[in-house]
Length: 312
Image 1 (cartoon, helix red, strand yellow):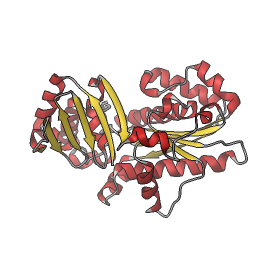
Image 2 (cartoon, one colour; image 1 turned 90 degrees about the vertical axis):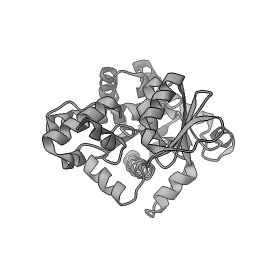
Image 3 (tube, one colour; image 1 turned 180 degrees about the vertical axis):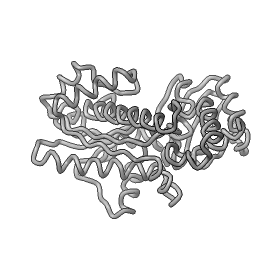
């Protein structure tokens, strides 16, 4: 089961307890509170550690990301598994020709999910590093857009997929978890790029890990798909692989462009993330255009839809 762990202040944990007041369940020993939502089970401990577990833990976790003092996204016993599993990338992969895949928009109420995978040849790695390509989470949006243009100028092969909100909501109502949606997006983007690069040297494919490899494989197998050879998984892969970092930049740039389009469509600036500001924006949209209008611009199963009713 995928999980995300944050280390938060007592003040933030108390705010979380209030925010999840309608979802509280009996907490385990040593916990401040435990809440259960449709996306995850959230358990906050006296130590400051907050554990998000479930089908889509990142959906809930993203709401508190900007307040985290320390963050790690892991699977059960992930550190042991990364030391031994056949899906852990060899250290030589990072300095060789490889494909890296990452996504954006998964924890944002408004906007689509975008997935981009990039093929970086061994001779392009240093150039990309010199340009300043790194994890998009550590870059400002203007810098991300600028770097994305530079990557495209280098004619680096990439594949980009966008799961628009209407399709996302349709799949979610059919029983697809966000984890399965992401797995299928990564899978199709990778296959497209592998076909695009043809016989170019390829030492491996690295996916920024959002669930256990076994879960990923199960997701794609339900759609009669199988894992490509030499596919590896790693948490925080964008910090090690320039290809994954480039993928994160292209995916984020696409997400930002889609957010601009949606903002223009609804006639209001749609905020990123899943904060209180998002709840207030949802309420305004419901008042102005009706709740059905959210289907085209939002991930409607997020808890924010219910929270917004407090502002109606």
